[in-house]
Image (cartoon, rainbow, N blue to C red; front, side, top):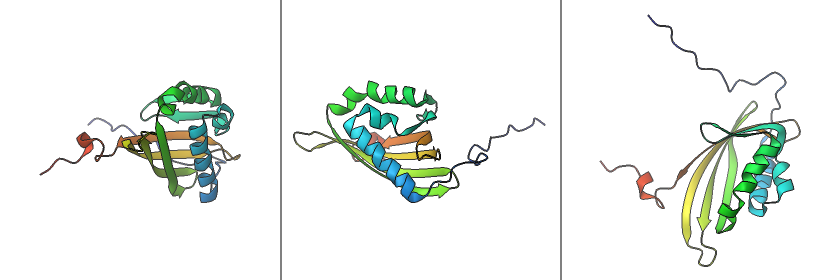
Length: 154
């Protein structure tokens, strides 16, 4: 009989982990949305610990404050060509692990017509200064804007 591989307990709190409260998390989320909408490089950098990790969704996208900020700035033209809004909130906090849910809406600034809408789930950890140290995101298009996302009819 072959031994079964073990799945690591990556959600266990590391020793001395910072345990955020809902207010701290919401304050960070609001700063995230403000930074995303303004593309202020300093505001973006201020979101992250020096050694933060951004996973997107199944691989590391960037490691470290400078690399994460550079990734955001590299996408500026993609987002600033059209309108977009986002609203996110924490839905669970378990020790140092935070789960958020939100929705991002892309629209035509001239007409207000929706161009796309996404549901987002983030799993976060924070440093003691309230900056994010781990950011894992998943997202999917809404079926009303992308019919291929709808459940198949039975």
